[in-house]
Image (cartoon, rainbow, N blue to C red; front, side):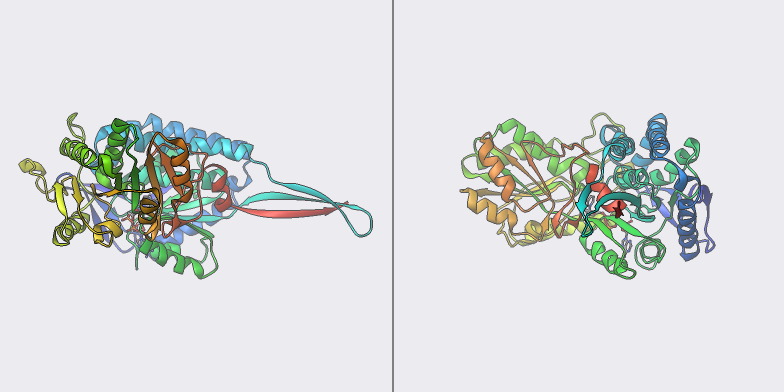
Length: 486
Ligand code: NAD
């Protein structure tokens, strides 16, 4: 069986405790690896290596030299595309067409995009008169924050990890990554690419394990960590903020969502149906930006429900490399139980189950996988659990609406505020809605369309801070003001 080791100071290392946990393929429940859990000694060693690297070759490099390494990393991932693809698919079970179009290429591109940012962003400068009639010049200098803890989820493992590691390294920091316990493979594999491109030892480190009383907590509570960037559940974000409070460390939090799509009667119907299908069911609904609440203007409500039902029923589950596969399994048995719990709750709360609601019938060799059916409900009050709580599965509730004000108040009546998508051909109305829906990201007639230079993040309980382009620099650098009296 494959051993998945920690990557510390440029080397793959086991642990002193001998503790391991299984890496499981969610397609069939097979154990595919033995992950070596990092205890306090390994986390200490990783943070110490990251701290030392700041003072070594890495800390002395010019921006241009750092950018050359980032470019080589992007190239290195692409040269080993199939290895990354295989590793990501074994860990997640996602269809290969999705991982090969989204996860791996974006995982590489995240290194490239921050090269342009770090090379081109300037800082402010001002001149002023002093009391004695002379002049003073002040200017800003960006310096790295230091050691950054990068704590990641399992839904887009490589992509969401490099989304943080890319800008952190571009800005001259060093990192200790704690990948999700469900998806340890690609972060580990990236260590090989780091060594191959000549990244100095200690700049990129990976420690495996869980959250509380494990690598996640040891890392985020470590006093030599200078900043924590986290993507995951809002509840975990609270724990991480509490850890960061000790020592007053900055946090960047990309958290949960309960995103709404708003479909007006004058929309391009095919575009709306196709796009909402993707936003509800892609990656088996395990996308933070995914839609779980759909509001449709009453004149097209029945037609829309029927069209989405048809689309959901053509989401064929199956093996990642089968051309017919449209949807993979959920990440784990635990998550499957959570999603099925919501399916049961929706029925108990009186939902009309338009389609799905259970587990699909799978061939014998896939029966132990974490499958659920794409599911659509109607008829629930806005207070129902499946309308208020994040499920993170391939499901949505569809409700009719009659006016802009009504739909706006329903969409905003939620503790999360990550993303929304609005479908209408009335561009004025779309823009008015986009300005009033309380989210970090609003799409008009689209979904998941991203320009990596733009701010990404959530409002309300969906997060703190924005990452992307120049916005990432706010978190990954310290802005110092220098005042010169002349
Ligand atoms: P999670 O919060 O359970 O785990 C995320 C990571 O945090 C894992 O590596 C885990 O081991 C670690 N962790 C857990 N408890 C910890 C603790 N006390 N201290 C330190 N680390 C700890 O999230 P998940 O289940 O892996 O991912 C799904 C969630 O992520 C969903 O809520 C989804 O909306 C959210 N998400 C948000 C975004 C975004 O950009 N806003 C993107 C993807 C996923």
